[in-house]
Image 1 (cartoon, rainbow, N blue to C red):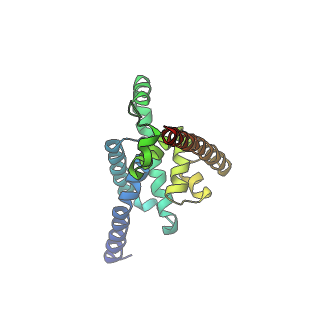
Image 2: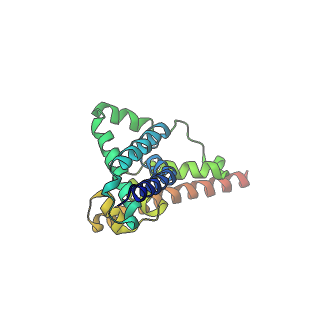
Image 3: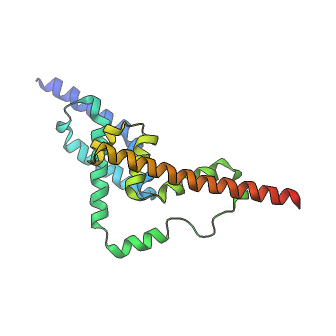
Length: 185
């Protein structure tokens, strides 16, 4: 391999990583619920990916490999956290005084509610639903990213979608009931 070939290959890899930054950030945000932490995780993932780009054997599987690096960074972050921080952060995940169903007509508020519902999912379910439904990865790719069997991916995804459906249906019923009561007055 000539130096020119190596440089062109490295340049192409760097371009792919730059294009992947937004996807990594979006995924990290879905997993963490914290924009600053998501940015840090995306940056750490890109740093590691640049250092280990030689590990990518199949360009078709680049995105799966990159999400596996992100998953590794996320797991390391969770290991570094102290147990007392976990409880406190869970308490502050959703703001106090959530708006009532009547105020949720704005699509931005609905999007925030869906994001909050996803954030309420356990880590494994949140990771699977975000990789499959947001990024469009196959079950096999997600299994590779998370280092779990395909059956685990399928069951986590099923449980996650049921939980989201239940929470969002409850919201819809509350909204409908609230609108009905307002029209009676």
